[in-house]
Image (cartoon, rainbow, N blue to C red; front, side):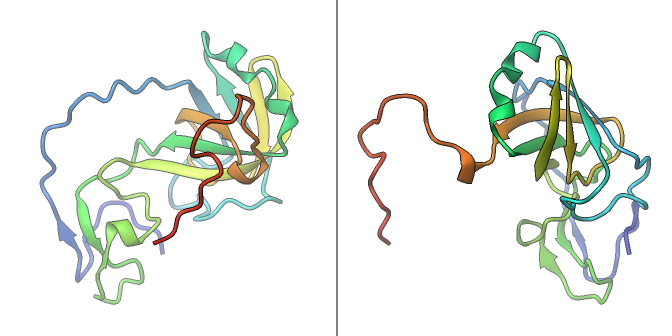
Length: 165
């Protein structure tokens, strides 16, 4: 069950260091039907409700060409999330899991990601399906889904190399 601020058995808190300004700029705001974490789905679904990605000026021209992609990666700032849990017990059973081994919104830097299906492009917004965030969530960035993206720039050294451990 989703919780707001309680600390469960087996969970460990950390006192985060003072934040350095990373220079992040919100490019827009996300509009969804959910106003609380208690009602927001834990995972976005491709058949979920239509949601809106409102794009702020001066970022609207950056949408040019995005209609070529069926799916986009949406990065957002989970502004209502705790940032102090290092061990979490999502099943509330006392068994702890490290935050970096979970997709929980409670993280040191609460950046959310999801792959959304692009429904349509409008001059100031995108209509998508597949989101899992609260209405009003700040939008950080948009990218074509990696599997659909082909670089436009000429090939560079290392582009065709494969990694061998």
